[in-house]
Length: 395
Ligand SMILES: *Cc1c(COP(=O)(O)O)cnc(C)c1O
Image (cartoon, rainbow, N blue to C red; front, side, top):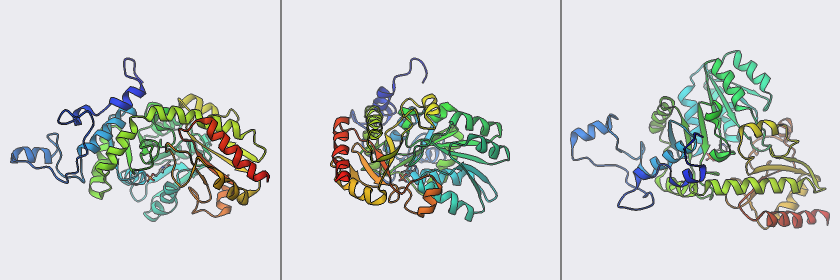
């Protein structure tokens, strides 16, 4: 962050809204209009060909959606941003905008389930080659990049074992090879990490998670340099994966408290991770804030906070998980994450449901792994709740 620039809390509240306010309203309006009328034919033409600022048709742009894009653009320190109906639409449109038959992508084994499906099934079907490296093995990733590729795709921290990749190191190698580095920053949020400042070219978010923060709206966004973002935008406006204005409004409102929520979630996740380490039923705790986590040092360097996501495995396998989770009072047992309420789920049911037990084992995911998305509750209550749930295992 540059000197003289407001802090993250101030930006989360004020950034990007001013030019979208109307009628003296202090809040950005939800504009539900599908199209925008012009009495002046010349002006209409100028807006249509992009010579003049303005809106034409809702699939292309919308003022409420633009306000959301502008706020996130500022929080990520980017030149430009464009939004999508979901995080997966942001990812698939970005990949589609830069890849052609014969292209080669280098990524990691631990990407989000939907992204992994694109890498292992959709792209190969289009004759696009994908090499997935062991997450955290920077040496092998760099040697793959040196062999030649067209795009490097990262996600850090990852789902569900919160592995860390050194963005600076990989982006530098990609830059030397003349290719773009794309980073899915959903788990970290711009509060904890700004990939562009670490040398990445494009940063992607599922706005459905922490940005919105209230599990009531779907969305996605990509930020980066103007040329790249425009290319992705033109791809998206034709493919039609447009963010809905009501979703944009809900996410924009959620983002006002982004810094407050993330600070609290960082603290709660740390407190829960430390507590879990003291529980005899817990086999292993995965959290980059713990000194023994393999990515801890890199996380310390590139993140301002370790995030609200952690995972842990328990003794007793799946039956123990099935006994434990229903006992939790202050946790939704659901597939989402990054909400104000704590959310828990077995990895075998949520992010890696499409894998076989053998595939999960190969990825280092124990069958009894539980993903824990810390909410903004009081940490003492979360710990008390876990304690009483674990006492069921003792019985
Ligand atoms: C949820 C998620 C996505 C996909 O986002 P949707 O909004 O559900 O399409 C992508 N990446 C990560 C890391 C996610 O957690």
